[in-house]
Image (cartoon, rainbow, N blue to C red; front, side, top):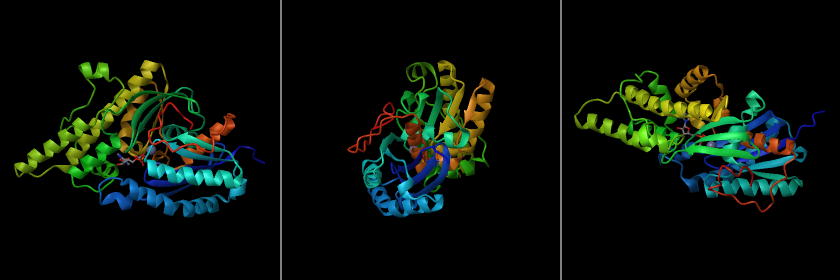
Length: 348
Ligand code: KG4
Ligand code: ZN
């Protein structure tokens, strides 16, 4: 008899409808329905399209999750849901579904922070989180460096992007290079054939006064513009664009800055464990360079497998289970969907 809490997690902050079920820190199922294909022709996520897709996918995804996990809804001990940050309409679908389930089943509800969930998910793969852990979260919507003494109650932002998110930069540069949306995986693939030192693209906020003022912050919009200009100049001169070299050099600029600042933050705060999460954590060069630099600095690196790095319900369930395990008070039933929920509030 396993008395660890059985928790259902719901994630709808962007374009993935995720339903995950965990027992304590054991993953039972991670069901995801993505609307990414519906956004591709717009070159980015369209909020209204995402909300509608969540509405349509919610019940079938929930049913599939329960079936695959061999779990009956009445056996669930608690429901956890992403309360924010994210797209308002999209969040609302998940929060409404979670409330309906909590009321119908007579079980507690935990409205959780999406960023904290990206950190908490790694307990499913690599066991308990060291306290504190340094977290680098990089996705299409966020790029943050977080000091995490306690993922259920104490998350401190050290820095974030001041313009584009890292994944957004990948997606925009992919567009410039004529690669499909979302561009990250395509750049990653094409870059393997390219020379990462072919073009010296700018590393934002890494020198002089910028570094002093924005020590642990990121900026990718100047890099994106530099890549566009570089490509335009070639095209205007009637020259062919060396796509693989541009992709590899751009990617190197992004991952160089991300890993450099993450390692510097660990050193600065005396933290020996770095976790990387979010969709961009799937990037092969980011994983390799982070490992190299962490090894050199004596830092232990944790990166969840790619499926747990992108948005999913398991991460929400994993964080919810930790709330239950630590005896935290549930959220109120009137908890709001908060599109700009600050990372410092881990629970709604
Ligand atoms: O976490 P995620 O699925 O959704 C958001 O919360 O945004 O992240 C999606 C982002 C996209 O921008 C996508 O291009 C990027 O992650 N991405 C990658 C890779 N795989 C996904 N970026 C670089 N390299 C990859 N292999
Ligand atoms: Zn995310």
